[in-house]
Image (tube, rainbow over the protein chains, first blue to last red):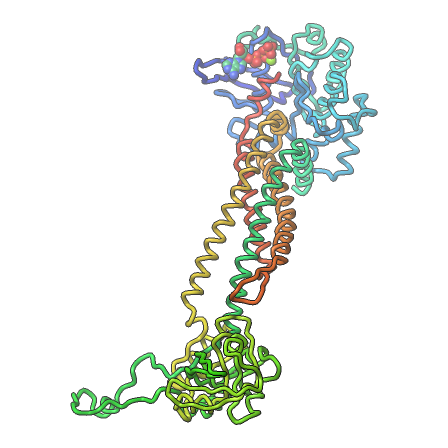
Length: 225
Length: 415
Ligand SMILES: Nc1ncnc2c1ncn2[C@@H]1O[C@H](COP(=O)(O)OP(=O)(O)OP(=O)(O)O)[C@@H](O)[C@H]1O
Ligand SMILES: [Mg+2]
């Protein structure tokens, strides 16, 4: 299996009044089409690792290579472009734009990419929403939806530009068990052999971790054996 | 990038709408700034234009007189270069322009305009035992209408009435009133030279300016020459140019060809024109300051919105929106406020200028007048341009700050 993402010697130190080491030397790979779970105690550095893998944050040392392309020397604009084209994010909080409908929120990354015309973007966005069981909610704004529905809209948005890698940080953390199961199922189903997508989920949920192809346990900013 | 603009626009619109009340305050600020700027410019430049027009209308565009810029060389100087000559009386020049009709005929060969002669004489008019001081101008009724408004200011008759009797005189309206004379009356005119003649009042002139109407009287050239004791000479040739802005160039050519001093209206009023320039400079400074202050409001609104929308900015940036796009969103918001403000401001400015133009002013020195307002597209364009630039600048700084935001700092805190 080839690695989609290779992280080598990752360190992230926050130089505040008291310097804090969030990530303290991590080597890891994310393989194509796999479902990877990252677990670990609270404060161990799971979110911090995800931000580095997702090019939202820049490592203090080390390198993240995505699709064979080293990213540490890329400028802000190039990293933004890579996020837009090849990465998708889902957070514990949905982070939808409150003034826009579900459909418009899903269309946002496509419009920012500017590859398709408006009609095609709308069609694609409503297809994704329908595939996640949100066909009837496309024109609702976030405040008019339930927590589980919002989180599914957030997943739809993450999928908008057909990313190679979806990074999810406790996506079910705010959901009841029924919604959690639904969201988990969606994440589980989008990857797998031939899907062209890898999914990395940070979770405290042992049940979720069970379903992953592989698990990575983080303690104190390091991979625990 | 063509798909980006509607996106930027739709996001900007939602932000503006989410802060409707503040937006309206900001728009009003810009509108008031633009409105007052336009009104101020239309009054100030209107009064200036009106003043210059009156100046240009009431005075000759070019005045040719027998003054010299340098004293003419004495014949003896010319004959014996450096020699010192004593015992000669200097040659006295009689004041006045010689052969005025020959000069006028020569000028008319090329002059883009018209020319007319005049003779000045100070005199006292006696009527019904009362003496009134008067400034008499000798004119040529055939030429006068081409260079001045006098012919349009004659009541009951025309300039040609001067030909009606052998010594005809036209009195200013105020003067006629002071002297108590009416058309058909005979008045005794005594010039400063001591020459006296009896003249018949044939018409009354009314320029609408007290100073002129109270002191002026008009007679034929030859009558004035008799009174002034200068047969064959005139004091001034007045030129009206077809294009007033050509006056300077024409004046210097006349001076070169005739040797008589030719003064254009611009030269005669150099001080005034530069005072106007200073006034305009001050006006545009004040106008710019007003619009700058108006843009502070816009700056405030955009800053507030960027703070409120920190999370949304973080989302957009985490999704991979380029910083430039985020910047464009907020600059566009600022421009939306600016554009709405300037459109409203144009309306406001027009309405206020129009209102000002309706007010009537009464003055003891002039006929009743209205404020000379002008409606110049350039005023609207300049105010609009400054307001819009100020909006862009006001939006740019908060926009740049918003675009520089690191999304991970917000996301780390929020999840
Ligand atoms: N701004 C900051 N300044 C100092 N330390 C920080 C800051 N942000 C995070 N940390 C610390 O970095 C460490 C890793 O944080 P991170 O959020 O990655 O943990 P986590 O594994 O995601 O925890 P959780 O399961 O609670 O989400 C924690 O010990 C945290 O206290
Ligand atoms: Mg976390």
